[in-house]
Length: 140
Image (tube, rainbow, N blue to C red; front, side, top):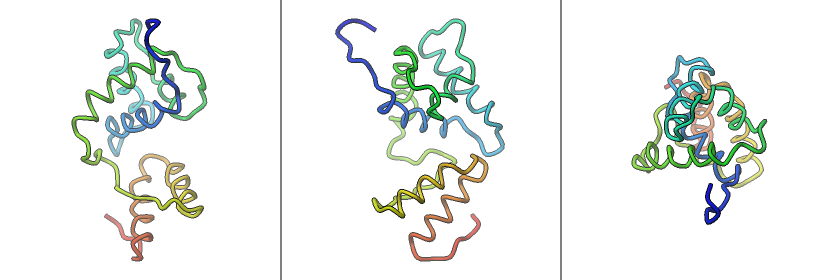
């Protein structure tokens, strides 16, 4: 990072990392497989040698690492700009569009949905979206 760059904050970058994780995940993947792909792409973007392991983006995404390096945060921003931004506003595959109302119940629903393991998250989000629309939960 040069002296004229503004330091990146984890709170600003973590949602971008979440979108990258969704982008690189597939329904039958194990957690390590998803984060392996994320780490490989981030390492390539940053020119990181040796490359980061799956644990680094996993810990940052989970929030268990509070101060990741600026190079890592910059790689997230650059990769997100390359991979996700051109596709916006399209919905990343494996995701379900749900607008959570800004109410205590809406925030609780969002936390509950994000706590569900990745393979079951799609159905959990579909159930919440259906409930918000006033219907019964359905399998899709």
